[in-house]
Length: 483
Image (cartoon, rainbow, N blue to C red):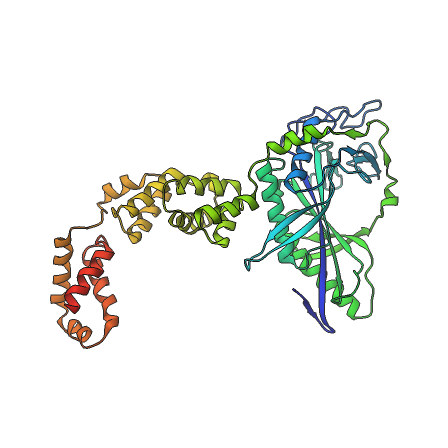
């Protein structure tokens, strides 16, 4: 169990997350307006989105299908009957003066997410619900020194609000939860998870308590837009609350913001309760009734999800739990690995993908989709190692050139003359020359200094420019030195 040390002993942090995930759909939830990111301000706004009088919402069936698909991916209960409600509040970028959301009867009920933790363990976090709602517009405060501009392009875009149980107990677990949820959504194709574009945002609920005590008063940190900020906000907020309580104060239930420049949470407003929003069923929308067979048909189209893929990688490819977890964290990584591993040693393929490739990509700031080395070409490099054309050491040199140029391994090996020397007589000649040049070291080795064996191997590899087959060098050296 992860505890925070305070002046009065151990404290436990209790975390629940509300993730707003933008639905992948070409049209908005209740209108036909486009949803493309980056369009000119107010260029994707219909009369419905702008709340012109007399305009009525019309449900987008595809958005409903995406919500059901997500619920099934979270192993959650799909509610065949759900209701859209009006959540009433005033804000300049909310033209209607209310948000169409779901309250008492959401489209998806209880589900679960299995977290893969850094220490190799896993634990399950409950999902309370998933409901559909429309997004608000966006207030732009940096366009004018004294005015706020409003962009309604986002107004009416379909969101899935995915609410967790308060099951997480550390910032690391919260980070793992967001990563896993984002991975599942991307596998399903229901949200792109691009937090930097705002298509996935987190409201973070944090409270603290002494171990074993009832839950404390929680504060909600709104609209956190990166996993790193989620974790930093939790760390700061937990310590802030502990300090207040230990000094004799009490925590006010409130909504706070994460200041990304000062790395502190700041008070925004007192926390609203459900009754403050005056929820009531939207009179313009009928209750949403789903057909059980339709839901079953969607279930049949689900892809292999991360947990199932991880289990298969461990079973079929005999990968470690850690390596399998790294490879399935993104569908594109898993697909790349499987293309490399097809017909080859899967452990060797995994080592090259998670080691050299991911290392170079990370250093270059590239995603795997942008890799200059295709899966086919990395497979070709591994084939050259497997058939002894090149050694593992030479392969690393070849890979570096592949990453820089995008060339095939075989072409680089031929051009640079890097083929491994497997001619026994040639290797034997190099070994004889090394031994003749180092008679004192030979004498020391034969008198019991076994560690000098590595010296001789190094000298032979140097003499052959690293091209001699290491296994053959070891075998012939052993015969000559111990012969």
